[in-house]
Amino acid sequence: MVGKKEVKPVAVLVITCVVWGALLGLIHGATKERIEEAERAELYRTLSEIFPGAQFSEENGRYVCMENGEVVGYAVVVEERGFGGRMEVVVGVSPEGTVVGVRVVSHGETPGLGSKITEEGFLAQFGGKRLEEIALKKDGGEIEAVTGATISSRAAVRAVRKGLENLRG
Amino acid sequence: MENLLGIVIAAIFINNIVLTKFLGLCSFFGISTRVKTAVMMGMAVTFVATCSSLITWLVHRYFLVPFHIEYMRIVAFILVIASFVQLVEITIRKLSPPLYRAFGIYLPLITVNCAILGVTLINVDVERYSFPAAVVNGFATGLGYSLAILMMSGMRERLEISDAPSSFRGLPLAFLTAALLALAFQGFSGMVE
Amino acid sequence: MKVQEFTKGILKRNPVLGLVLGLCPVLAITTRVENALGMSVAFTFVIVLSNLLISLLKRFIPRDVRIPTFIVIIASFVTIVEMLIHGYSPSLYEQLGIFLPLITVNCIVLGRAEAFASKRPVPETLLDTLGMSVGFSLSILVISFLREFFGTGKVLVFGHQVVPGLLSSPATGMILPPGAFLVMGILLALLKKARVI
Image 1 (cartoon, rainbow over the protein chains, first blue to last red):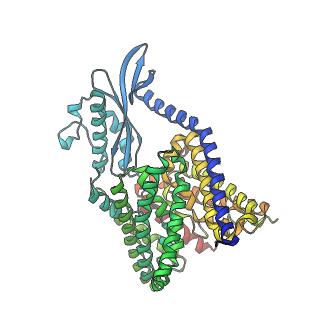
Image 2: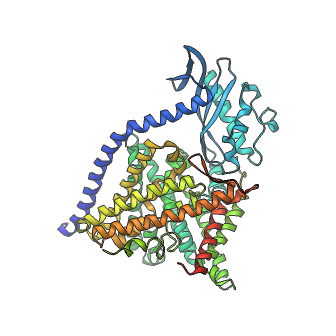
Image 3: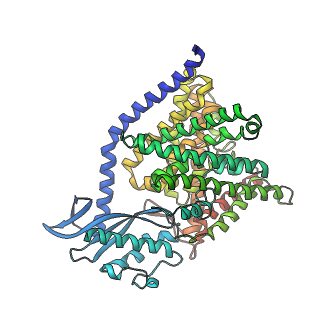
């Protein structure tokens, strides 16, 4: 038989877990909308860096960007494996199929080297390019890699290509 | 499908858990004064990291995700790790007292070793690995930890008998050694694409 | 109730530079002063509230399961702070990455619970954990300031340049992993030399 001595510690631990589980559930319920809201606001802020002054709406995982009732472009969030792990990139494309702008939302690249792929100097190169032109110069394309961060640059290029292909398909 | 060999090389050398990801530092500096204890700790961490990666991945996929309680993952993972370590401790105490005497004292320390919770979170949160990739990553991360702590303990055994300025003796010198090791590991950057 | 319960955590028994504990966030997120500020807030929230609760409940927690109970309480507070930061500052959430959930296994938090909160009354626990938080925050702010300044040549906090760009060619290595170990080693040696800690 299990004595009272063994039951008490286990009971306390189980009660702790149950009480906290319930409490966390409540707090999660209270903050859930706030978190989704904040994430959407963050994404729309990034999108308006690419399409200033446009309105955005979500449609099958891609974002339609409208200005004065006209479609000015589409955007998509893509994931790619970089040098330091997963990176998330937002690609904005015009209705004609050229890149309007690119933003790196999150990445795990080396600070000071690979992280330079998030800077305007590198990202601006994608502006106006078509799918065929998007590759590093050393791979026969038109994008200059960040010095000392070829792998990070190549991952960014792959992400942009993936974004263009997603939007085309 | 991820490249499993790539994950192994990345976890051991390029993104070494201790020297570039800064996880498991307390034990890295705390238990690296002797090579023998470092080897024991390395083996224990590798075993627990592999099994924890396996269990937490399953818990996440088949329990947390279906019930939409992914936000409970920190509590769930740490409980899984703590109970697993406890279970291992009880098992080896019953089965092999000599093994328990060698490993016993390291096991409780592993529960709060951030390398373990860290690797389980990296598997499901940061990299979103598939099941085989997560287990391989757990194992390789343990190997990376063992490599780092083994090198560190080898150097610290020698540093102890060297004639260093008194204010640098002990931990300050250990940190500078770690800086040089980390610098060397930076050289692995770009080995795997 | 003594004031020294508060002050000991800042200098004599500073958790980071004195006891050399809780190193993971100290070295990992100190690439920018901004991140160090965020980590300080999250850390203070978790250590103060979880230890207060542990001190309140100490009579009801059986000895055998005290460590798992402490861990569950700490992990829950970490989950709460994670949800709050995720909701109110997604960019900080992104920057801190897994080091936010890893406060759960920070040895300082569990160490204070085991060594102090589980034995002492609530007011003393409050002073103790507040002191530890100040000590922790000061340490990571100093380290991140040194790393950001020497690594990037300037210090940016919320878009404001706190320190003018003095270095024309910053040493990028300082914000890379080796720089973290280097700064920590030199700081420890200097403090040992000055016999402060």
